[in-house]
Figure (spheres, rainbow, N blue to C red):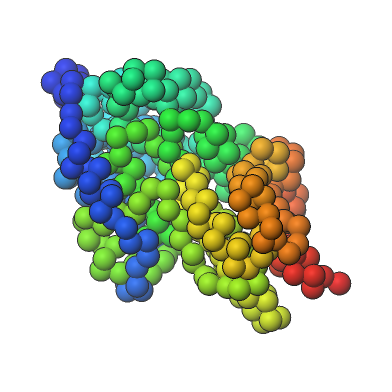
Length: 364
């Protein structure tokens, strides 16, 4: 911690112009296929490269060091960067989140890992009141370049206290940027952008996706590759219906689109990537082309991400709709523990297919 204290004292004011220019320069949102990489390795390599490039970046959280990370996202970082930049903490989210915010006040770039975002509720005062609001309340005199990252949403058989999706919670708060990667390209490009950003970023991963492999190009593997925050990606072009999704649900939407294509329905799938800011222009442009919308998310129905998308489309593109908007969400109950009930509580591929058919007036 001596390094941390020294850096906090010596870095009272920093210039972010070069970082911002790099973010603005990254306009490309997709990569051609090449080798494959797991989401876990994509996150690990992004952390490694950003820590190598900027000595102000450090990682802290439970088991991030000696144990190599609960999900091995920080594997190898302790050996490479040492215990002053890969800091194992006690089980006290409020404590280490507060230390991270204080370090960010003084110009460091902490990456705070929560073992699950359900535990971030212990630290929500620091995330919302200390991190998200400080830039505004200080008239832009205080920047808070911090990343809060970890698994979000349902995994498998871990009960209600470890299965909630927090995208809508944090997405409703001014001052935060909220990112939800799906693929290895997303994970790598968005995490690097989040670490370089001058504002606090909530980075919501998915435990089930960590071990999944996705094609990545040489462009994605370049140490300078980043993705622009606030820009969605059209994963699949279509003309009959728009499906919006984020995180693990993007994969479900793509599989549903394959099934629908066999029945003559062409679905356009949008990977939101960013919950706040939300890429409203891309969503509305797609709806104006397809004239139908199905929103998809794991979270609760009330006040969800899908509800915000529905409002945006009704406000900006209502005259283009040929059918009522369909909204697919998790069940409005705490997550059940029993596997059969758990499956019923989260959206499934067949739910997406049925909703799209209703929107296209093809349901029986």
